Image (cartoon, rainbow, N blue to C red; front, side, top):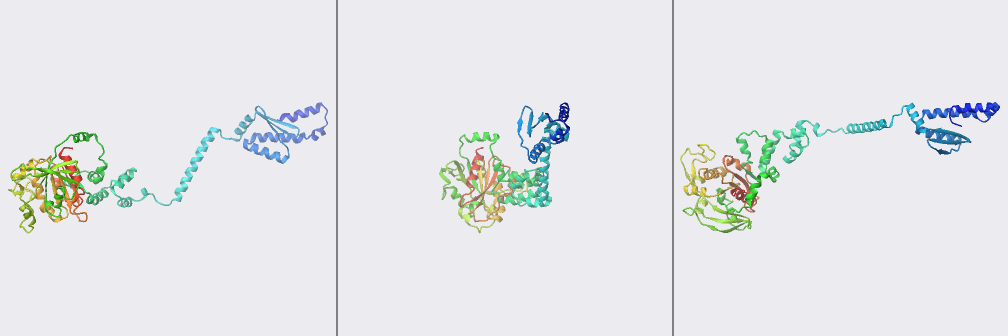
Length: 462
C-alpha cells in the first residue's frame, strides 16, 4: 500500500469485491488509518525538514511503535505494526514544503546571515559607544588641544601631525612653533650660516616658524643628513690627499679664563692634539710662525695664533681704553669705510682695520678660528665684534675661507651665553662667508674635535 489519499479508497473497493462486512473495515482500524495518513501528509506538506524529524520522533514515542527506517533510492520506508508507509521523492517534498511555508533559498540565506552579522556588530559598537561616556582627543576644543600640544617637544609634535589632516593642521600652528623656537634654540650647541634664526628674522623671511625650526634645529639636520647623490663629488674629493690647511686662531677668548685652550691645542695635557713640528714665518716680523698640529692622528693643520699684544700687555688689565684700542693687530681708519655687511658708517668696522702685515697674512691662509669667552656676556660685544669684522673684511680675506667660532667656557660648571644668543650679539648673519659656531668646554675639549673636523673639511672643499 502507498501512503497517499487513494489508499483508503482502494481498500474499500477491494473489500466490496470480496463481500467483506463493514464491521471488518472498522475492526481492522482502517478508519483511524485513513485519518492518520491524511494528517501525516498534511503535516509533511506544511512543516520544514527539521520540525519533521523532531515531530516523527515524538509521535513514535507517544504511540509506542518501534520504528525501523530503510533507506532506498530516493525514498524512505517506515514500518509500523505490519503497515508499510512509503514516502517517495523526499527531496521533492522538502522543496515543496519550503516553497509552501516561504523559506528563503540557500543563496538568500547567506546574504541574510551576512546582514544579520553586520547588524549585530553595529549594535555592539553602538552599545560600546553608549557605554563610553568620555571624549576623544579630536573632540576637544582647539584651544585645549593646543594647550596639550604645548607640553610636547618638537619631535612629538611632528609625529602627532603625521597621523591625520586635523592633527596636521593643529600641529602647524604658528604660535606653537614660535614658542618651540624661542625655548629650544637656547639649548642648541651649534649654529651656522644656514641655521641661524637671526638671519631669517633680519630678512623678514616668508617661512613659517615650523619651517625655520626644521632648518635651524641640529636635531632635525642630523636626521636629514643621510646619503645624497649630490654629496658624491665631495665624497670622492675627500679620498684625494690634500695639504694641511693653514689656520689662523684669534679672538678675546685667548686672553681670558679660556686661554688654556691654546695649550690644549698644542698637546699639553691632551691626547687629542699633538704637535708634529714648527713651520717658519712667511712674513716679516715673525708674523705667520706656527705649529703643525695633528688631531687624533687623522686631521692635520698648520696653526697660527694671533694675540692682541705681548703677555705683559694682555695681563695689564688696568690699561686705559678698550681692547680694540689696545689691540696691536688693528689700526684706526678714517670714517666712511665699508663694513663686511656692505653698510657705511658702521661703528664696529669703520674705526679699525688690520695692519698691513696682518692683511697680508689673511690673504695667505685657508681658514680662521675665532675664540670667544662665553662666560663674559657683557664684554662680548665690546671686545669681540671690532676684531672679528676687521679681519673678516672681504677686501683682504677671501669669502671662500671658512670661519669657526668657539664659544668657550673653562669647565662644564660655568654658566654661559647660549650659542644662538652669542651669534645674534656678534651679528654673524652679516658675514658673507661660511661659518659655524660650536659650544666648547676647554677642560674636556668637548665640541672642539667636531669644530676642527668641520673647519678642515670645509677648507679642503669637502
